[in-house]
Length: 205
Image (tube, rainbow, N blue to C red; front, side, top):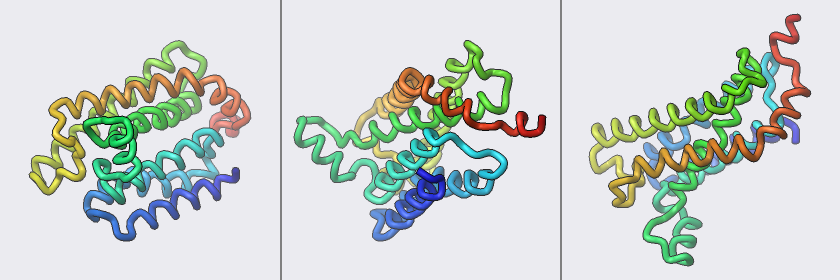
């Protein structure tokens, strides 16, 4: 699929999700990563095009963020259906969102490290990728804590804890699981696609 199509799908999803969003502040906080990341990818494309695999995953992540931002993660209808169908005690969309928060950034970090550092082919590439994903997850949890301190109960929709005192730990565990699954399932395919790209260093040579 052409990169422009991926960008168009992500941009359209974000725009549609803003219409009638449950809470405009929550929508912005949940989607800001895509709102900032999409223009950066477009602006840097000529100098630093991404693999098709990563483009597809980033687009899928934008869709997940758009849905969560529109409804809030605790009130996504599909998550309510899963909760009621399987007798769960909470809407699981937030857990899914944090799984994706590890799964997709793992390939992003892996691609950046493979193309801009000496780590390509190194045994340290995978563990350092996972560490980067966990660092991002921890920073996100700190952001949620800051939102709670500033907004009080007004930040409940953004936190989506749903009464779980271990929500922060579960969120980070889901991100860790997502990162590990991503590397285990997609590393070989990712390497094949990376070999088809000319890195900036290669182009200069």
